[in-house]
Length: 162
Image (cartoon, rainbow, N blue to C red; front, side, top):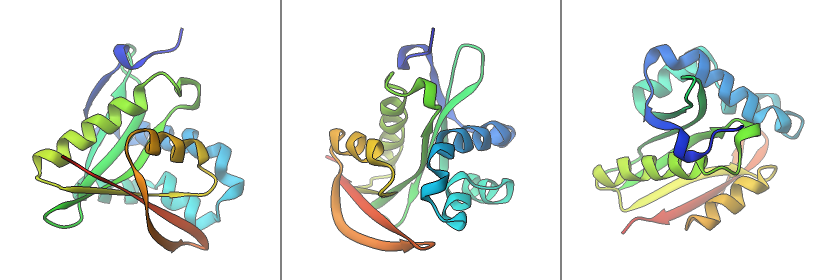
């Protein structure tokens, strides 16, 4: 039986969670590796050093199952006094569709609301069609922003928090 959102706990990540966060990101994005440039993939799944930097600069949340294993993650932080940004949303492939991603997103948005953010942005890539549909279902819309992500188009989404 696979965990659903009701059977996981969302909490802030700790430094000692790093190996499991890295494993979760790698497993979640492995199926897309061939669609990414090497640099883009490495920036997505992180390294111990880039994860340590993200832990310093952003708040990272993890979804933990009843066996105390990390099954999902998301990072959020401030870009400016009123704009928040999401990065590194991942749920283990076998657990997708059970509401874990929605709970992670809700927790990150709650954190950003507490920081008085009016607007939240995130970036995604064309291979992540399921992720784009997920974000759109949760009120995110394409902002029109398109940048280069290590040789790949990076599509910006935004949502205004009320």
